[in-house]
Image 1 (cartoon, one colour):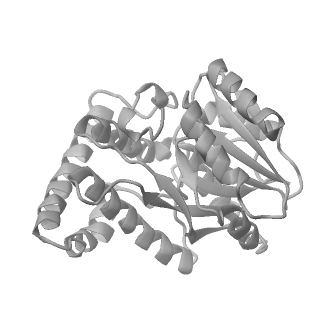
Image 2: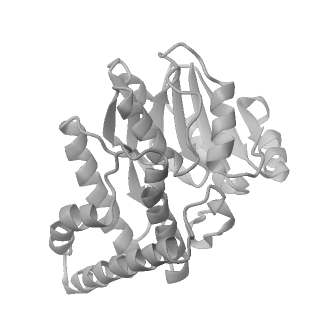
Image 3: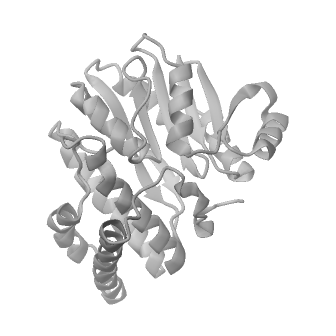
Length: 301
């Protein structure tokens, strides 16, 4: 059995496109799509449009990870051949997603699989260029770590796990970070599928960019609350070590080189602001982050 879970937040039109991308997959395997969303209006809209093609689970409104925990416990199966695919309502997967994920899980040592985030933004403007640079950079890192069979964090935009391994996870950090670590510690491999793309619209203005990036860094900095032995690939020092040289070589022209320099100083600024909020203002990661709306990343709603 394949369970596809799409977490959304009051984005019925965008979520419809996310659903359509899964329903159009060319696969003989049976799968069930469940939408997790805290708004009854979303349920009404989707049930009317898709009728018996999808399930809907009403998010209690305490946070994405909180709702996922409840639902994962509900669909828990001791059959480790069962697959759970997790994605979001504002991103879209490539047509080969389900089949490639199924193939990879034939290796019984694989417990978690990550798709490849691909930017929908134009490279011709600064924020769009930044998204391409950052996505291509993490793609390079994940490719290498997956090939070397080392730990890396799966992408929360699209990842898949075996059922029968866990019923729940800690709410102290983002679900993709904690679950990747959990499977690795249980002795399973994490595999990166660079051919399975998930298309993402990234922030298109400074306000939204700042909110998203501070939130992401806080989630990674909070992993120590899960366990002192919790692994991580994303940190300030790892970003410098693995990303600086790649960033300098990435530009194709003078304009992109200037944008790259701006991004380097912007990342430094974002880290400084985040550490200030964490250390001095005690503002750490919270599972209720979706209340901070980022409008420019919503493709249709």
